Amino acid sequence: MIKSHLICRSSNQWSTVVSVTLFAILFVASISYASNRFSLLSLPSSPWPWRLMTTTSYSSSSSSSTSFSIPSFNLRRPPPPSPSPPLNRRTDLYSMFHCDSDVCKKQNEKKNRVVSKMMEELKQETLLRMKLKKKDKKLEKVEAELGRARFLIRGGAADGGDRSDLNRSSDDTDDYVPHGSIYRNPSMFHRSYLLMEKLFKVYVHEEGEPPLFHTGPTSNIYSMEGVFLNFIENDPHFRISDPDRAHVYFLPFSVAMILDNLFDPIIRDKAVLGRVIGDYVHTVSTRYPYWNRSLGSDHFMLSCHDWGPRATWYVHSLYFTSIRLLCNANTSEFFNPRKDASIPEISLHPGEKTTITGGLPASNRTTLAFFAGGQFHGKIRPLLFQHWKDGDEDIKVYDRVPKNVSYQEMMKTSRFCLCPSGFEVASPRITEAIYAECVPVLISQHYVLPFSDVLDWDAFSVRVLVSEIPNLKKILLGISDDKYKRLQENVKMVQRHFLVNNPPKRYDVYHMILHSLWLRRLNLQIYVTPLKCHDYVVAPNA
Image 1 (tube, rainbow, N blue to C red):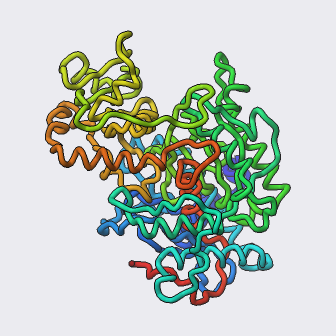
Image 2 (image 1 turned 180 degrees about the vertical axis):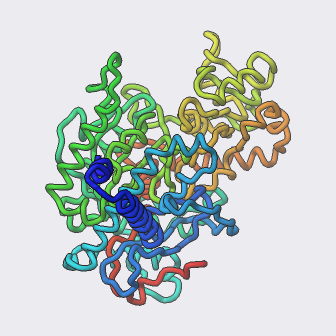
């Protein structure tokens, strides 16, 4: 409308063309400026090539006392460097949006428009911080505490530093120390876990009423929503009432409960998620200063519902900047493992407060592989059924378990339990297999496995590509007895990290979720103060 108005009113067509051209140049220049200078939301093109500690400044001025940066901090052994793909200059802030095909570009057109808008918002917010806003002494203190934690986790105490933060309290009864091949770096994980127990504090926003907030399902495949909400709400150790001392802020809505109570199966208005969650974020962002000072990057949500990722899209800063704890950790749906964390999908039965484990030793497991589940769920399972249903005595594949067969007993007597993705990447069969001491066979695409920044899944599971499904039996028979015994022993060892305990116990699934959250908060620096000796964590290329 503005452009047509200018054309109608102008007596000189050349001046109109020049005006429009100059406007276009200024717009593209502003986008390029933002792309070059701001990297708060930088997404890796793949979940795996993260460095241990790489800091990218959110401000071009290194001397600025108020800037943002995200160092990539995780407990993996550093992988070999891989070349980064060329990025579209307009979308290099979110490299996962970059694609070459016309279909991909069309699918991401809406998200790219949102990206450009957010880049401008980030630019304006940063300029305000640099020029107008005063220092936040309380936040500086929190960031200094996290800086010391990074130093200690990287082994600073071994160099003669103060070890007091790594000491256990005298009333601890579980003296478990992580060890063995199931961990990527057991000593670093141990240090990180102890520091989490010592320092980490979570503020739970109290706004909202049940059943949409502060409660969730405690049975079925969405049970982790209710389990975590219940545990964190009643946790006297990690939950804190003073928001100024908190490291992260929890948005306690349940996607499953919102849909159960407000979603009309006939009208099918999915935007109900946007209205509820959008109103909630608006409430906490106007009532408290914490969301706005970090652009939501130290706030988190948790969901195991299939629509968990979709629910965050309606609040773009929640989608792009906040920490999302998701069961459906699908990188093709813009799950960003640098800021988001994958949590296990656990299906609890009604009234079941803890998980039950146990199975037969390797020598007594008579079935090579087992799976039971819907045949037409997603694109992977039909291939599995096509090749293996009723086609082999050693591989049992059912859409429904026969009446004379027990699902639980089949898992306990099978050497391998097949865990193909369904409509979504996550599957409760992975944890079911671990509970039954059955080696999981993972068949999925674009799935970031739970706690994979700490656990080495190759030590206790088998990965099979979708293209390898026809060769499934050959692959499994090719695993020697010695290797299988090691895999199964490691499955038993890793069980503790997937158990639901009531009350929670150290290193169980509740505490592992908190530890994943702790690592994501360590990945973020909201307020950079002048560096002291303990702020140096590791060289960028370490």
